[in-house]
Length: 97
Image (cartoon, rainbow, N blue to C red):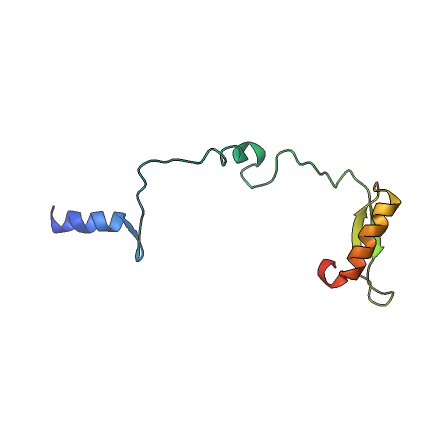
């Protein structure tokens, strides 16, 4: 092999100072293939389980009257569940709002 061919061969096997790993095949694990059916090219789910545009939500203030920190809770939840979410969100208000 000539010096020019050897340099070209080395250039094709490197990106910057890093060697390119040549795999024996173009194998994609089977568990990754179904993701193409779930997500579009922008990684947005094709069929979302949650559609917040059609669900009504209620605003809850987990801050104070002087410093309001609103969070949204699904309006269709039972009152007991909403109260539990509110209490948890209020307790950890520095994390959630």
